[in-house]
Structure formats: structure tokens, C-alpha cells
Image (cartoon, rainbow, N blue to C red; front, side, top):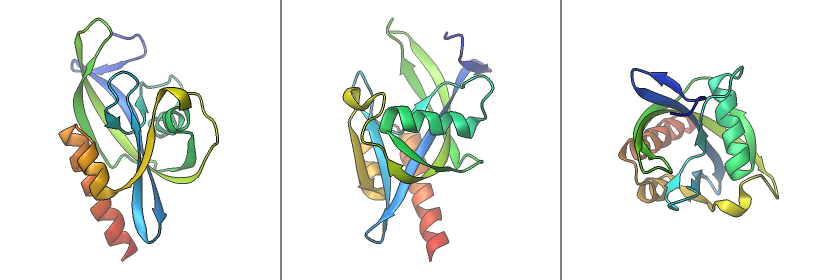
Length: 150
């Protein structure tokens, strides 16, 4: 187990950003690919000592997708998945997800050359993401943001 992983009852805690924006009258979600398998996910990572969960999520969004914005203080929800380590072992993880309204995307960022990014509609994001829990969370967020706007 990683020394920075926060472990609660044998589950390792991570923080993620759910980057979103309004474009052409619709809410769009920014997805990134994983470095190794190319699966579509949201920017996420381990807790950073001395930083609040939302700050950790914002840092991951900047490093993995080059986006800067306003991160909600409260998570919209969480999902679980099995992280495959380099050793091949599976590590159970719980990811708390923080909505982040994107204000801008930088021209360059630390992981630009090792990941793809894609702005997509809520429905397209749900279709691209393989983790069932993350799909549900994106759909739920889409419903909430649409209700808030209308």
C-alpha cells in the first residue's frame, strides 16, 4: 500500500474532480484517460497531507487535465473501484468526487503528453466511463445541475 493512501476499513481513499462547464446551452464533462489502459475517467489521486479533499481534487484536475476552476467544498458522491497496481495486485479504492466548474484550460500541464482529454455531454460521458459507480455519479450530477439551471 502506498504510504500516502488514506486507509479506512481496508479501503484506500482517493479524491477526484468532476470538471464541468456549460457550452452551447448544455453541460459538458471533461474526461481524461488513464495512463496505462486508456480507460476514460475523471482526474483523481491520493490525499495530500495538509490539504483539504477539495484542494486535492483541484490539484489532480490541474495535473491530469490542465483545468482551473471553482471546486465545490462538498463531494457530490463517491464510487468504488479496484486499482490495479504495477505488481498486478488489486487495491480496493473509494473515490470521493468534487464537482469543479472549469474556468479555463491551460495550453500545457504536467500530464498533457501522457493522457487524452475529452469534453463531452453527460450522456456521452456516461457511455465512455467503464466504472458503474462513476457512471451513476455523472448521471446524478447531470440531473442536479439541469434542475438547478431550470
